[in-house]
Amino acid sequence: MLDALRRDERAIEGLPIRLVIALVVGIASLSVMMNTISGLGSLGVTELDVQPEPEIVAPGSHSIDVTVVDPEGATIGNATVIAKSGTARLSGVQTATTDDSGVATLDVAPSLGANQAEGTVTLDVKPPDGSYADRRSNTAILVVEN
Image 1 (cartoon, rainbow, N blue to C red):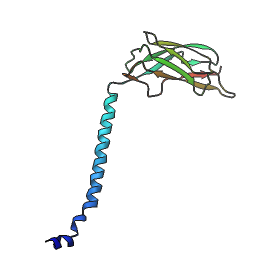
Image 2 (cartoon, one colour):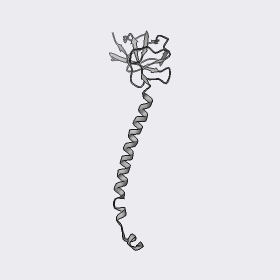
Image 3 (cartoon, helix red, strand yellow):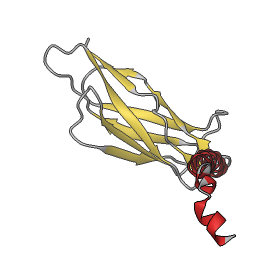
Image 4 (tube, rainbow, N blue to C red):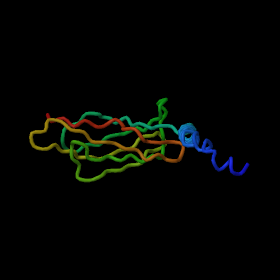
């Protein structure tokens, strides 16, 4: 009987294909589980956006009121609004914190480059706590040469 087992080489025939199938099924299952787990954390997170007023300015010094809102339009207090150079230039980064009514006032002085007719100042939001997020791009301030 021992001699018959030594001569039998069939046991290894299906092993490599079974390992490949098990590996593919395992990776697919892991992918589904990871998507489910990563989705759970974002169920309670609300994406924020900004509403600058005015949205369109000329180059030079301006005071801009920026309202931070959630997808339903409710204002968010205690969020930090950050204005940075986009295609229009600022002398530095400007920050302001929203009040209880969700409005922050930024004093910006955007400028345009030579032969540049328009540009943008980008606005980012640092949410007040973990139930909010700002992963998507926000409304920008358009700077237009007169």
